[in-house]
Image (tube, rainbow, N blue to C red; front, side, top):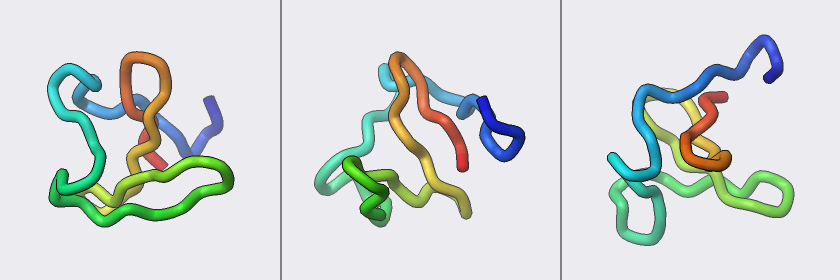
Length: 51
């Protein structure tokens, strides 16, 4: 993991981002990240990476 990334405080089981999840979608290369509490969440295996 890069220095600017960390594991999010919740897993995909606790909250799943997607259409109508209430968070702004941001296109990032070949996938979509979501703005969540001032940072981006990127799905990664069973958790979110924070950017």
